[in-house]
Image 1 (cartoon, rainbow, N blue to C red):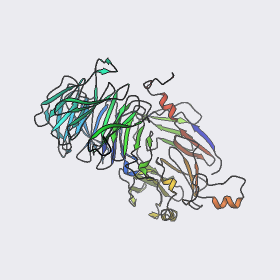
Image 2 (image 1 turned 180 degrees about the horizontal axis):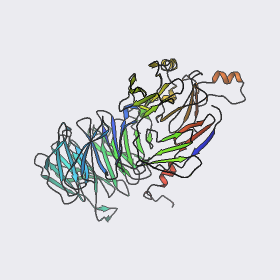
Image 3 (image 1 turned 90 degrees about the horizontal axis):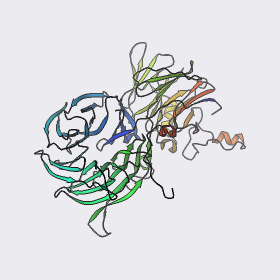
Image 4 (image 1 turned 60 degrees about the horizontal axis):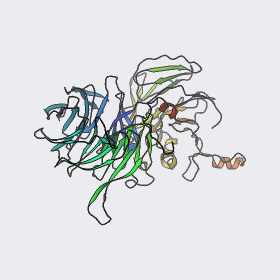
Length: 571
């Protein structure tokens, strides 16, 4: 790999926004995530959990609810009182509609996907019909005395459960009338709390309603009689979120203490047909409040104030040595937030609402506002490569202002790309960790790229769970490709053979006292360094100088609100 002078940068004061809510789409295997700044992200779980789409947030939009309807339509609602639908092709907000109930705290789509419910600050539950182009108001349900903080449909679509402050209401959808009102217990460890907030409800097919509340309880209710069946005290603080599996055999809850609990429906005895809900697994992958959870067929998904999006696999539901079998914790965006001017030694940092321009060796910053997208321009200025919402890449002739060619379609989204100087070869990285090299002048893949696809990459390279976010090239060594993800920096030397699965990928050279013959025999194309992490950006300033921008997680956590302090034994 050689030796480099490294500018190790840690003054990029980037702090991701906390996660407010998530919504899982079982049909497309996609996850929508909204953050506290109004940003909405779409993750394709079938494409190695890649963040394939992104909607910038705005100060006036505080998203409190997010849901999918009619398969591929995404809606959100928040404290500004508006319901918004997102255009997933144009990547903008399709329209916004005022619900006229004040701030919206909750939202749920009907099992058929044709209707939308919202719960409002003024105690109203409003039903909207989803039409091909918009949504249309249909009716108000019986107004309640306090805000509606959570909603859930019965799978038949005939009834809904609404969680509020101190009680749960059951409504008949056809009439809009409340048929039951269940008062929750304010008692917490023998002490009566002033209010009990029902943060989440789930309505099961057998008529059971599961609720989670600010008293730290998970409670089971009979919706037919309006009575409490069972109660579990699981936390010393709020239980803030709940999600149920499609088969209704398990559910997950998140607490303000940062713990995620898994409940499963299991037989009372080994030979019994009678089943009961049992708390089986607690997980502590968060440092702060778990504001939202989701339940996919193979994983428990959680997010909250600490900004981490966590995928905890259900090992009994996934295949071993599969992408889905590893715990994943996503903190940083799957796109490059930093640009570098090598000649002027400038770094451009992208924040949510502004840019900062830094000169290496200087402490003066200036800012402006500008939109960003995934583009690559050739060093000679003749070619422009652009990747849109699909996995396709189009190459344009800048001087003639017309399309030159389109790179053959690939099933996985593009995570990074760059055009090499002199050769004008376009190097493209995809979310499944495949790397392609495409000759723009010849309009075809290069010989090296065809060799790679024929032989295949090392299995450890393909098992990495963070996408490549930046690609660059050595100015004096045209056979070298430089790329990195959040946890490694790699130089690919195209003049050397590719490693096979029997070769050590991360340690290509034996100890220095070995003979040169052995060193040459074990050398391969991949030179990998894991010194710098989390690595947001790395590039060459000149042939002997690197700049590396890191963002330690401890620095991010230090800027978050303090977590709930839990007393430990002996302290």
